Image (cartoon, rainbow, N blue to C red; front, side):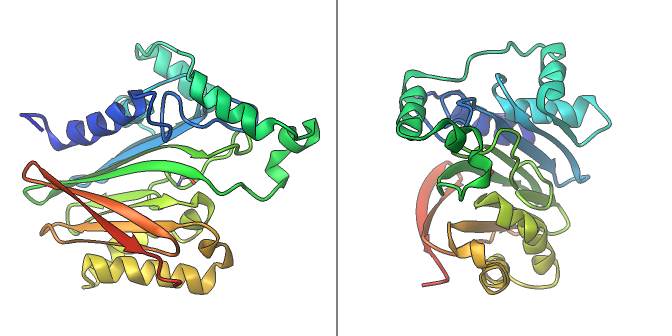
Length: 272
Ligand code: GLY
């Protein structure tokens, strides 16, 4: 935050998480897909002009949030995918690297042990083992807002599977006229709900951030049976600094950092 613009703060916050191999959630050392490869998704959106950049299903490139920012700033596009996103990253000076570590290899081997080849090669056809990790950051400074998120998606996912996180409107949304919103949890359901866009539009219509998040989560519980099978979380930050969060199920820890001080709040599932 020292002298940097808000976009860089959000990017660097996520990049720091991605580059920490002891943090199994995103980036280097994250839990891989069913082939044992880490595939990453990320996006960043600037509320000033709704400009956004995203990268999805990218292997061997970290921080993928910085690649998303390059897509936003160096191309006329919003998203690049897969090996072509990796090619663009290399053109932009990223060095490909092995994202597997002793710990995520150990966890992958544990998952695969006892499974037939058909079970892990065709894991896409199975119910997901519901564990996934995402970090989503909403930043606000003097009424200006930026949203960013980075994920390795659902652990042991089908190769090529992409969830809500890199999708503008699903995993994140930012509009300086209103504020921003972000999501974490089961990407298929959050995407179908257009969770982040909906939260921002409910705030535009007059709801507080807490009311908006609860309305999104309650509608998901009502309309989407799978939304209670794993946490689907939406959180929102209004341009006046008010914030809120809601989760369909389970518990969700939200970290709030204001004027250099951090606190955590736990939100309980609305299905309880
Ligand atoms: N929310 C992360 C994912 O489902 O990919």
